[in-house]
Length: 547
Image (tube, rainbow, N blue to C red; front, side, top):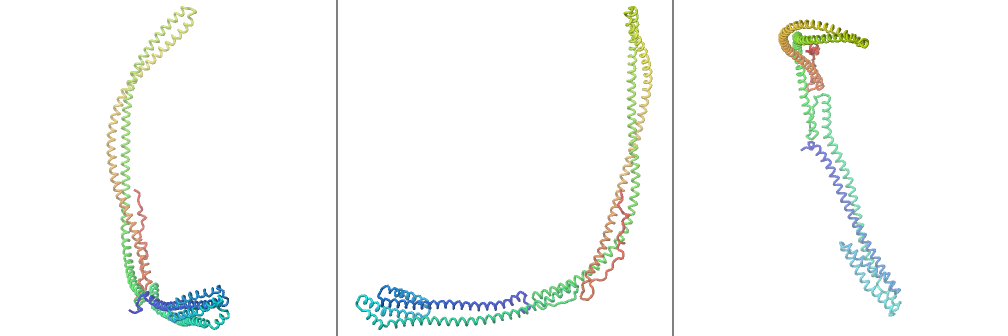
């Protein structure tokens, strides 16, 4: 597979992987350098430890020799302390040096030789000197003889030999330091060269790969941006060709497919806009025709509704008049019945009055008799008072007054009797006339009842006619309302058709910004009706009518 066809991620991973590989190599080189330097430092520390041990061995030899000479000269056993401590320190540092150089056979050989030299010096020179000093201390040997023998002894030569061996050991370690320093310097030089070369190689490789990958990615993206800008401007004639199969090539291919699909969509929208405008014009024409017919139907229904309303009003008025006549007849019948009852009650009352008048006449006769008796008694009393003389004069006056009252009462009773008699005669005549009037009122009530029944039948028939006419009127009103609703729907349909026409025109203007491969606009000029309001009828004459 060609590198240009690889995904962008693989390209970036490859480029950065190559640069990272160089950096890894540089890291390995640096790691090796630092490891070598660390190892050299560790061995240098080891070497300096060996050198320190050789210095300690030399110091131990000095202490041994100094202590031995001091004891030999002075003879004080306390002077042997440096000798003894030096001997112990020599053995200790010798063991440590042998441990540090266990991997170096030559150094081990030198240390073994040093150990043998020290043992020879201690057994020959040191032991002999100590025994002779003890003999001096014991008086067995003179000090001059000790000093003369000391001058002739080989102890100094043995000590110089041990120092030479120690210097040989230290010199060998110093040579190792020199070799390691040279190796570190050489390694440092190589590492610096590798760092410079690796950095330059990584920079060059990174720059070359970055430029190459940038061209591989940026060129398709620039083409994609150019195509997107052309589409944004409405130019659908631009063409692109994807030369790679990575994401940028896929982007170009997708944009090309989108452009092709957009051309199809714009063409379809153009065709749909033309169809919408044609259909809108047809719908508008149909709505205009339907509006005219609906308006004529509404006018006819309005006239019918008006006639039905007048007929309903007339029949309702007749029914109301019949109802009122029936009510009046019923009222007259009730009045006649009540009049008959009143006449009957009057007849009964007159009979009662006649009987009461008879009783009053009887009572008046009794009163008249009482007045007559009282008059006689008063007359007798007057006679008796006259007989009494002066003593009966006052009683005579009273008797005269009583007689006068009795006469007046008798006169009044006669007048009342005459009046009652006349009233009784009149009551009897009135009772007869009231009876005739009651019979007449009964006949009138029967006639009124018959009239009431006839008027009630007329009122019921008028009511039924009114209900029927009202139902017809309601049906006409419902038809008128339906017609009004149809008119509103026709008006809404006309407005919708007009809006659809405008939307189709707007859709045509929108797609007109796109330029197809033929170089012509995607929408033709739109033709709209010169007076769209003619399709929207006026419904002022079709306002809802009151029932």
